[in-house]
Image 1 (tube, helix red, strand yellow):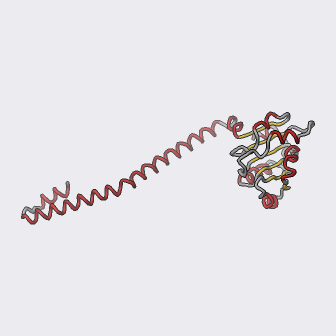
Image 2 (cartoon, helix red, strand yellow):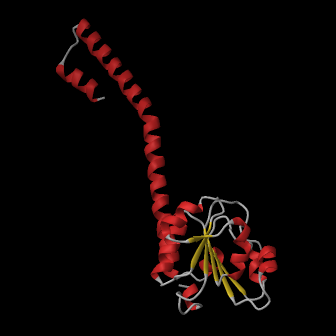
Image 3 (cartoon, helix red, strand yellow):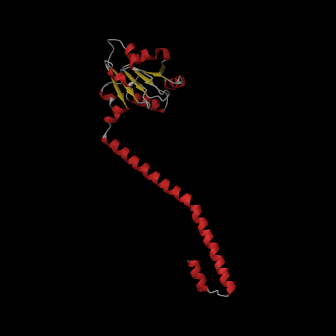
Length: 206
């Protein structure tokens, strides 16, 4: 939604998608739902051939990645294949032409897929998860609060049930011990001839 406020017609821009996982597949579906046509794919894990063939995308190899990223109007990164940024500010700056068109870079990676310094490059706008969070609708935060409450309540129930399970053997053992004492006492009463239904009932009640 934030990107669509900057791009009027999704059929026109060149788009580079970085990633081949579930987030990438979801992102691709959303892009196509908005009418995007020119979409290239780069896989930081090297497993992009199958994804590209299945989705009908042009696969960008390692050697052409930076140049393709610099030439794209929109770059969307959502890969978990690397702990370090896949796209650095230095590489993008070196590859971008002086007359390059404005570029929108969207980083959905956790950890980051794109160097935050990319936002400082002329003509480049960066949307990352921090930016998206700041502009998220308030009801999203309300839903997050409700989710936290649900998880907290479930955790408390789990902890209580665990405590019950931990103490149950002790309770059972104590009941068994008291039951044995009761039977022994009732047996002694019978031996002494002091047996009465009322006495036995009182003992069992205790």
